[in-house]
Length: 310
Image (cartoon, rainbow, N blue to C red):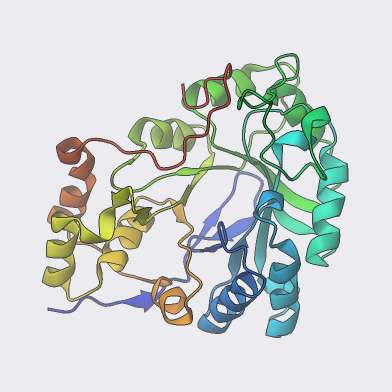
C-alpha cells in the first residue's frame, strides 16, 4: 500500500507569534558557486517557503540571488541565517554583513550558530574561518559567554530580523540562558542535529516545555550515520510504498519538529518536501533505532575547554 505523500504545507507558530514552515531547505555544505543557487531555485520552484543558510556556509550571496530570481514574493519566504562564532561581540555588524551578502532588507530568523565565542584576533582574512591556534585548538573565549551574546542579540532591530534563536544548545546551556538576569527574550528556535540515531528526546521535551521550537539539521544522517540504508527504515519504507528519506523526514515532522533536509539535486530537493503520517507502529519502530544501534552524533567540533553538548 502506498502512503499518501503530499508536499508539506504545515507551519508552526513560534513563541513570538511568527509562523515557520515545518520543512525547510538546508544549505550547509552547498559551497560550490552554483550548487546553493540551484538548490534554492529548485526548492522554491517545488513549493518550499523556508530556506536556511549561515554566514559560515559562505553561500549567502547565491542564496539571495536564487530568492530574487525565483519570482516568489519575499514576504512568502522564511529566511534564516546565523551569527558566526568570531562575531559574538558584534551581532548587529555580523547581521548587516549577512543582509548585504543576501541582498535582503531583513531575515525572518537569526540564530546564534554555536554557544561559543572565538577570539577574533586569530582570524585570518575574515571572521568566517574555522580558526585554530598553532597547536590545533580553537581560540575559545572564556571571559565572554553565550549569555553576553544573547544580551546583544535581544537588541537587534526588528526591521532587520523578525525572530531570534539559538543553535547547538544543550539542555544545560538553555537552562543557564533562561535563568540569566539579562535574558528577557526566550529563544524561538533551537536548531540541533537530530535524526533517528540522535533523537534528542530529553532536549526536545525541555524545549517544547519552554515554548522553544526544535529544528533538525542533518536529518538524514551522513556516511557515518547511514540512515537511508538502515534495515528498519527500509522495511517501513517498503511497507508504506515510499522512499527511506520520506520515512525519516516524516518521523521528524510527526514529532512537531522543524526539519531541514539538504540536497543539491533538484529531484531530491522536491522529493524531500513530501511527507506522510506514519502508522503508530512504524513511528515507534523508527523511534527505537537509537536504542538498538546506539546514538551517533555527526557534527561534534572541539571547542575545548567549552563542553559543547554537556
